[in-house]
Length: 374
Image (cartoon, rainbow, N blue to C red):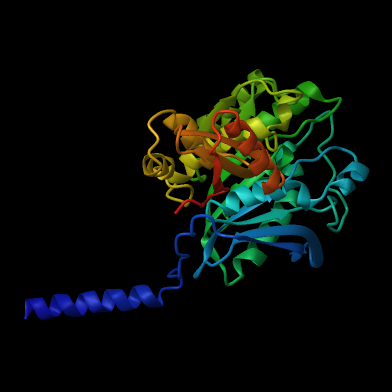
């Protein structure tokens, strides 16, 4: 009798789980080296009672059944509406492809006044008493509206969402985080903040106050990345911002990048910097229970190819940004790779050239993540 009751209870729980609105078909693991698909266009959102078109670029892996987690990427800004109008979503193509290769549907979203999105460009906080937290309301509205539109897509798992923002885009991500949008699981803030020209001291105080307003013990975990020579947000200011966030109860993992040339504030798309912070992002995604490159991928292929040295260098290939290629000499058990290019053929040619200086039998072993020597 008791066994029958337990079985009936288990069947009921399974049926309830299947019927529960949060129960979704999750995407299978993305095939290593899967092709990527890009979609350029507009997201139509509702903002302040009217339809707004936001320029977008969507990149996703092909051949996946089920739903993919969503990564929204958004840009920085300056005070000039003219220069913001010159910006395009395509600028972030290689970063979106980096995310797609990690198993995400990556969506670059241009906020109002930027690129080909509808305007106007939201006004900045002004002296003498700037309200940085309040000035990001329209920007947060744009990304929240884009999130809702994207979550309605049948190929997106709306319960696994991250936001990645550069400069004012990082601040936008934190402003939206404070609203607790459904499905948001983490924020990657790269050089985030707002620089108010001609209002340095008050502007910095207001930025620190914004961290207190946006953060809290219930905020999603965050990864913060700043270069030591960031000319807009120097280490002393970043330390104040971080202290304000931690004092508010936030879960912030902080990465201090080395000095970057020519400008520390350009860490988001800077090739060497991106190689560093993408590896840190991979570690955070694993900690947050979200998809990324398997931790053992490099070690597995290193052993499969019979290599015995430079494991750490070999592993770094898989987290590299942009288009990548690795050349291998089986006779010498040597490899060389290139990453950070905008086209695969350049990466392949450079990898073969460097490997060929070591041995005559070099061949391409990897095109991005696709293994060619089966």
